[in-house]
Amino acid sequence: MAYILLADDDAAARDLVQRALAVDGHAVTCTQDGAEALEQLQSSARKFDVLIADVQMPAVDGIALAEKSLKLQPKLRVILISGFAEEIDRAKHLKAKVARVVAKPVTLEGIRAAVKAALG
Image (spheres, one colour):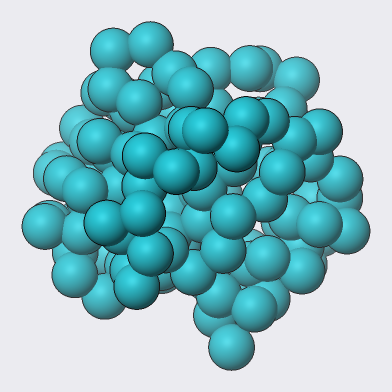
């Protein structure tokens, strides 16, 4: 079991990912944007194993969230979700620290495989 922090501004996507990962026995904390995810990282006594972040979100986007999260928890495994290749290009400087990139639309199999690989 892993502790997973999920940041996505799309409620349907959050629900889909949360349910898929819960079936695999993971504990998933859902947040609706990067700012809320950062609050969780800073205030939670729990250390998260994996951060799953949509790249395109209001307030703090997924790339900025990944950067700030890795400063707080350097061993955090990061999975970015995006529907646009040019958004992922903005994260090139994080390439060594991003475990996986998942293309939208997200599938149950795709997100489960990404988490398994990130944890492996």
